[in-house]
Image (cartoon, rainbow, N blue to C red; front, top):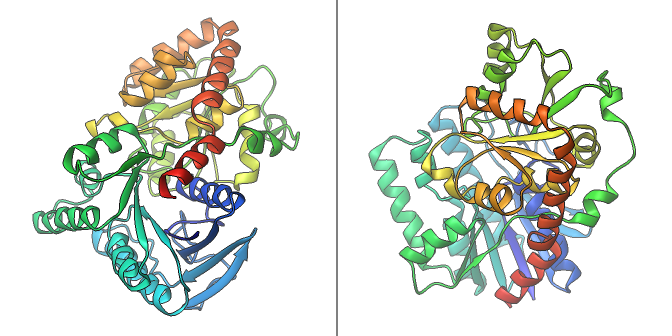
Length: 404
C-alpha cells in the first residue's frame, strides 16, 4: 500500500500535530506501508521559513526514512484573517501542483485538517491519482474558528460550511481525533465510515528520549521548589491568563514556581500581563525541540493543562496530557468534558479546576500542596491508564486495519 500524507504541518516544526503525524507515518512504515509526506516548508510557530528551506518553491528530502515533498507557503507574522487565509490558500495551491507533478502513484491519501481548505486539494488529487481519501479531522472547522472568534464574516462561514460538507461527502473514510469529533461527524454523515484516531503516546520512545540531564538544576531551580509546568503552543485557545493570575495570588509562597515553555501568538501579551500583575514566580522559556521535552517533564512536579471555557473544547484532549502522564507526573486539568471524564474521573491522574477560573485554580493548587504524598499516586495512575488505552503502537495498528 502506498500512502500520501497531506498536511500543512510536519517536522522539523515542533508541536502536537507535527509529532502525532510523524509518529503515525513511522508506525505505518514499520508495518510495511510505503509512506510519503506532502507538506509545507517549515515555519511554525514563529511564522518564518526555517533556515535551509528559504528561497525555494519546491524540494524533496528524506526525513528518517520518510520521503518528504515540500512546497511553497506564504508566511507572515501579521495575525489578521486576511493574512491567515493567504497562508492557508498558498499551500493549498502549491501542494496541488506538487501533488500533480512531483508525487507518483498513491493508493490512499490521508489529509490532515485543519486547515479545512486543504481538503479541496485532497479531493482533486484523489481524482487525479485514482486514490482513496481518508480525511482526518483534528479540529472541527469552521465550527471551532467561529466559536473562537477567528472567523466572523457570515459569507466566509457559509462558504466554509459548504466546503466542509463537500469534502466529507467526497471522502471514502473519515477519522477524528476525539470521540466528540467522531460523534459529531457520524451524526451528520451516518453513511460514512468514521474512525476514532485518538491521540496518544509511544511509551517506550518517550522514555528513550530521557538523556538524564537535570533541567531543574540547569535552570537554577532547587529540589525544594514545586514546579507547575505548561508546555506547548501559547495561543488564544489555551486560556493561559488564569495561570498568570493564580501565580500572582500565590507569589507569597517562596518555593512555588510556574514554568511556561513554548511560543505562539499570545506569548507577548501574557508576558506583559505577568509584569502588570507582578507575578515574578512565573518563568517563560522558548519552545524546545521534541527531544528535550522528556527531560523537562521529568524535572517538574505537576503539569497544568488549560483551555478556554467554551463548548467547543468539551471534546478536546490535548496531546500534552499523554507526555506528562507517560512520565508519571500528575496533572492539573482546566478542561471540562471528555478529557476530565477520561483522565480525572476514570484514570484518577490528578485534579480538575474550572477553566479560566484563577480563583479555583488557586484552590486546587493549594489542595495539591497540602497532599504532596498523593502526587506520586496520581502520576502512577495516569501512567497505567495511558499505557492501557492510549498507546500509539496499538492505535496505529487499529488505524492500519481501518484503511486496509
